[in-house]
Length: 131
Image (cartoon, rainbow, N blue to C red; front, side, top):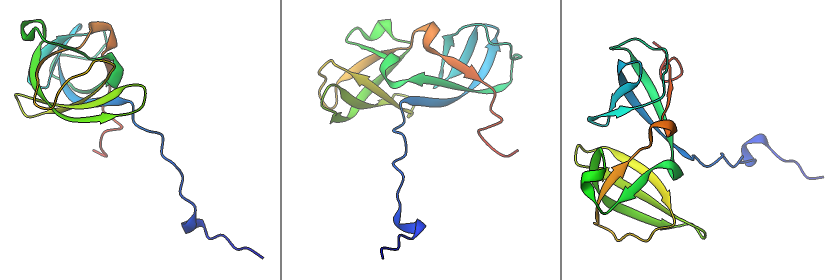
């Protein structure tokens, strides 16, 4: 008979689809993250609190017009996923963010990074660490 040990079973982890950033609350509708200030939905945390901000890979817009973005960065890695491209963007401040897009960018392209207000999910950070 066939014996399968639990160690032989590998569960495919769900592929991550969102960026998670540590952020600091500025006020009810603004947070600081990635070295810039972003407008977000009202979140109920207090100024100065450290929170977790999540942004889906496909909700970040890249633009040629760098003035449009709150941040600028360089395209560092491009993976073709069949129906979209998965990009790693390194910001000028040294952070990595991941972007799914149908637009074609080249390695090393300078981009403006736009994160729409409604796409920033602000949460407590109780699940970030065991403090």
